Image (tube, rainbow, N blue to C red; front, side, top):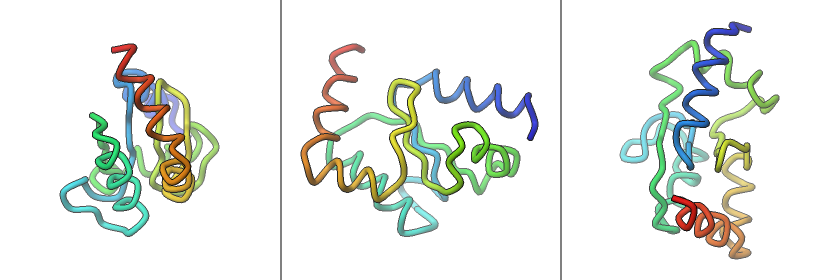
Length: 108
């Protein structure tokens, strides 16, 4: 675990209201789970920062320690870990993601 990298991750997470750490990019996702999470955010018309963990080995290796969440993607809203693809999809299907992201838009 590298504290400098964890600090950099914290800067990314707190630097944007909505951050998705994913494999690939929203335009070219490199796994189905990352694609699902990006599609949920797009379906909500959310503006978000996407971080390609495959392009940054330090983030790839250390992100699991940041919030004690071992898998990708990881969605953060207002600095808090929401979860991965399954949680994002379930929240979207229940209307909870739309409500959460609407609150983010109101605070910006």
